[in-house]
Image (cartoon, rainbow, N blue to C red; front, side, top):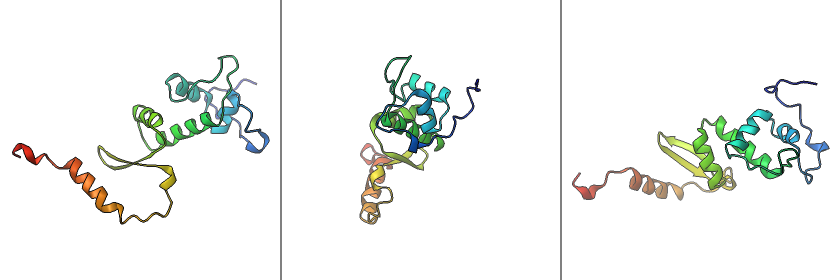
Amino acid sequence: MCRNRLTPPLAFDSTTVDRSAPLTFRELAAATRVVERQIRYMIAEGFVPPRGGRARADYGDDHVAVIRRHTDLRAKGLPPSAIKVLLEEGTAVPFSLAPGLTLMVEPRVIGSGADVEPLVPRLAEVLRTVLEKDRGHGD
């Protein structure tokens, strides 16, 4: 069966796949619901680490996580250069506060119910420090 390269992969039933076993490239595309062409781009550009040889590459949960994160960041409107930095730096989620100002939040604290009030004065202090003009230079 010849499929158009841009056709989304068939539905992926995670209950029928042994997650401890490596995924083939097609299984990776099905697991992430990302077309194979896009995954090849992500690998070529260094967003997703390659695994194994070209003829028989095996992929794991780490690849699924990176592809899903890339997809989420693109959906938020981040450019590829910013996504690459975020993927290299860790797992923080960006929240745009204003043009040129992004708050990075670790996923473990999102929805944690942590008290926000103690953070407000510290955040205000950091913003004042970063955004105010240098008063020491005669402004």
